[in-house]
Image (tube, rainbow, N blue to C red):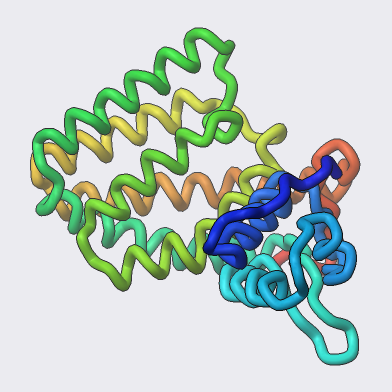
Length: 242
């Protein structure tokens, strides 16, 4: 793992939590690995107090679990947990899209249209490199979530689900394909929002996320037989029952 940048911000624990989140999502801190407070405190150059606060925040994000007499560990991805997470995401983001169709201004729509045009240009210039490599997929979804205007919905998605969602997508990005299909689906969702068709926007968003979850499931099943290449060690026992 690369050396960590020393933290000097007043919001010390939040900055540590952000760096740890990125390290876990990127795979720099391995799945299932034990969180060593002394080691991390030394790497960050901080005391144990703010580090422990950061680890508690990561527990809240679902990236870390704590067990008595064992301590904190990074989560181990598995198929059933992914399906459960994406089922919640489908319902919540579908609701966000429906609300955004009522709340999003014309300027918001134009900015999101411009973002999708940038995605198109990126795919053209980089031989269909997937969104996951540039973070743009998150940007599209997060803008719609925030446009919902529902504070509780925004918190549930951005503070409790999205870190784990990013982790699942990052660790299976090499196995997934056809980013242009995702772009087409994004444009259809935005068209429904722009036309204030809330029910249609919700339906299209739910279909979009359901499709993403099935692609992830396929990628994770492949990773069972190709764990090293996929970077996603998944035990067959963690697959959902048929």
